[in-house]
Image 1: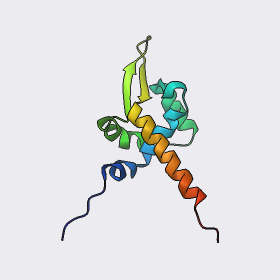
Image 2: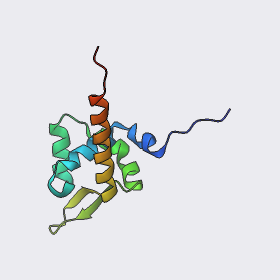
Image 3: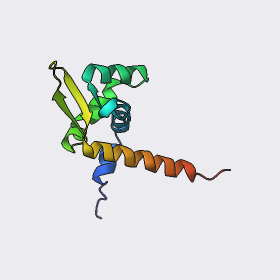
Image 4: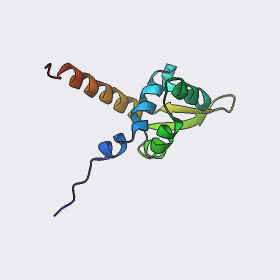
Length: 104
């Protein structure tokens, strides 16, 4: 029997940190911030840093997030164009699901 393989999207989306990371970065201007600001935002929203770390390498591999240095040589994390697009699609999918849930 052939083993069913999850799509790349569902393989990385299953990790809770992916959506949290994308949504958190989307809240910042230009969808970027210093790593320390990002961590502070995660903590203040009740998320655990481990959620981010579990999905970090995969999001980097697929080019959803990236890092750079700002003019002060602080490490900046940002959504790439692909990450921005995926975040918007996930948000749209969630909206569609909520709009079409059957009322009991």
